[in-house]
Image (cartoon, one colour):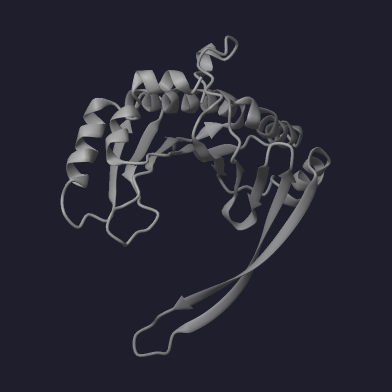
Length: 252
């Protein structure tokens, strides 16, 4: 991850990070001004290939003393794929949303151009689009061969808590969740030992640190890029709080 204030210096770029998946998602208020197909058509030239997925949704309605009513509807997702950075830009038509995801995150340059292209195309249509939610998620997975290695990765307080729980009998998974209300965002942090062999008794000690940085206010499209900077900044600082400083240096 990168601290957005130091983006030009590159001092906080973690080139050896443990991010298994990075996701940025935008949800916006419904408006007839947005033509998803047109946006996808204009973006296609920047990507290696385009995929279209048609889904069938089945809806059940219930009324007293009557058999449930069944209705079906179709929804289309559009996926734009770029092989060079293993990224996918997906538009969800019925949800008024799009999201960018990759497993090769290093810094904000990985998503910056893709998001800016979407914003510029929407602006060309002169739409004063407002978001209902913008989210940025970093899923970190750290290899740990034994429970004692937790103290070499997470800070002492977090490590001691996880090691104490893991010492109990018949533990199969340790997952904690914390939520924060910050000045410019909300943060949801999930961390612990997920145990890839769950529900078996805990015998794999790989660590999870999943940070979801969220702005759920109505933001004009002209502010979206600044919102991303704020979310990145907040996520990075929370990440640093959880990490052992010595281990953090090995990721740079």
